[in-house]
Length: 363
Image 1 (cartoon, rainbow, N blue to C red):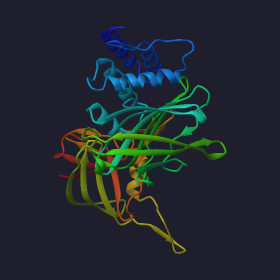
Image 2: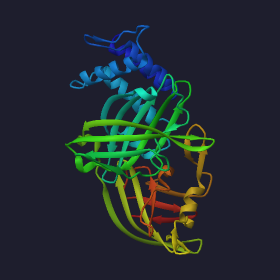
Image 3: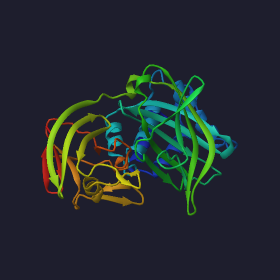
Image 4: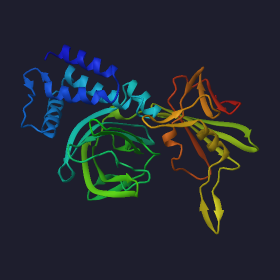
């Protein structure tokens, strides 16, 4: 099939959005043709072999960034920028072309899971690894790469030692039952200081969330790649001193941070502190955090979404609303401050924080 026809066919598939895009991607793996390299469909070929062959094709074409390879990457980007992924910061970054393609395949033979490490993007505080995995034998409906409260861990291997990387919020996940395939955007502490170096990561253990609680699937998925400058975005930070009162509590905006992945508004307050009981410190939601979560809506197919008809905490940038990133609303941080996460903004000079009926100019 000619490149032009392949790309046109993919464009038609992309209009259908997820989950149909999985089927179209699988068809393209069977039909790909680029220069003298082709992948033919044979009854004796397993999907794993075809996926691996597609990965080799992608790798072989990486020097020229062929139209076919570009089309495949567009499909993957479409998955992670679709309405089924609830991280508005990630979607914005992908739409703006941020990220380093990895395109590596790993086959977990013990569990018959084919893993595709798609791409990685980060700033100085957070990294996002985009992963898809599928199986012909194992039902993946309740399988998670849960770094937040599951058994899964992301590890950076340096020499003979593995360091567990801290998670940033929940991350995002979408499961397509028809294809028995999962797309996950994993969020963990930044590895930007290794830019230009060979990086060795391991994803250890899967988490099954079922009716009887969580259980562990022991496995290790390794990933090695050279971290390029395309993966890393800059952060711009401004100190702020803006005080406001909300529900009889006093808050102060201390800092605003802008990156291609997010906008962070760092706040302290009279009720942003741990609760001490019997000498033990417990984190409790402040009234500001509860106000943020008030506008959070849970959709079965789309994860966390924003209900703008409800009172909440929003960020307005030059008249345009930046969605809160609810998947990071419970991210760990210093107990004497709270970070409000929003989608990236283009106009960093005209930002207004809206807390209920209050409007606070941040710049």
